[in-house]
Length: 235
Length: 295
Figure (cartoon, rainbow over the protein chains, first blue to last red):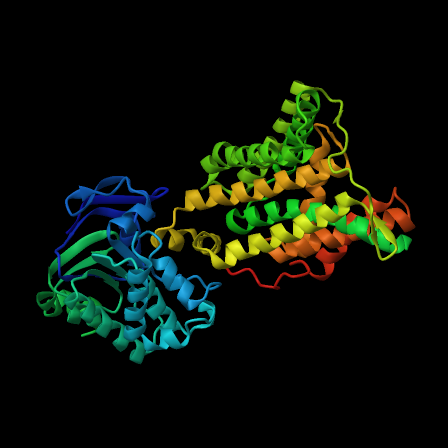
């Protein structure tokens, strides 16, 4: 579904992502694990069109998307829940969700239906519907960020560090939702520092170190890989 | 009664400052850019108004007020053109480059108009000539009334647009976070163009209102008007729509009262003194929240 080949990204002279190639198959959860600064967020940002790439190719459903503007990429069916949530703090919870479907030409009814589904998934958001999004707790903001991304009814959801800064109870909720989404036909590319949880729910994983893929395999294999165990699973 | 009359005069000129200040504040809110060429949009608007009225005078019996249509259209197009040609190519440049460019565009337009139409001001008969109305014993001119009413209506419409419509909310979202806005499918380019278009359309209305009171246009008129409106935006709290309106009205009233009761020569000094005072006491402006810049 998504294919990234030989991707190179620079920040001025810093070579942040080096010859990176990954593939995300439809209906799977694929995760990208690695330490801080390994280039995980950079990779996701370039897929969404927010960062220019130096060389390489990114295709979605066999079509190149490297020249597309971010809003058009969202339109094609790739939504991202960005690192740090980046919800619109000055707008209400409901307005944040409504903006999530900004790119989508759909009837008002269908959009309302989508909002209802998100409120069913995250009942707390319904309670806070008219509250300014900036007043939500970290966990609630993460739910809102996921809800906002789902409003465009994406085929592929990019999740950047959804567990960051959340209490364990919220982490559990968020990952339950991620597993539900797979059953609803959403494909997921997950970026996580918490390798334990990422490997436990994903089908396939890539390990990123200083901008380069150093290992890849089924998540089960990687969980039992001695190097990965030492470096990422704290064994 | 004289006081009431001066207060109304202040509200009138303040309303014009407010309309112009809205353009500064909207653009700043979304692009973090002080569009110094905004005053020149007013100037071009005033020329458009003056030439249209002269045309009407020579050829037709159309009411002068119809000049508002070409004026608003020209101002909107000029605003969008400035954004497209001068600021868009610098989107990812340091803010200082944008600032210098803004000053450059401003000087360019001043000199272009001077080259095209000469340094002399062009004048016309006044647009809104009706009998003065009686307002609690003070004679209020029709122009004053129209200016205040039009500004009030436009401010309310703008506020409704921003708070209630999809495009308005997209503007708020973009002003907060370009990246996140792009991720939900908002075109940042289109939103910025729209912001410049709305600000410049308001400037078009402001220039018609200005020409109604001071029926002439000159190449340098935009600079003082622009600086005063910018001051108004800062006094009220830059980036805030209600701040621009409040700042404009406060500035207009202070100016009118100073001219009437203290000294007309000191009025500008006092207006800018007010700016310094506000910046010293409340740097974020009258309505601004005092927020520490996040690092």
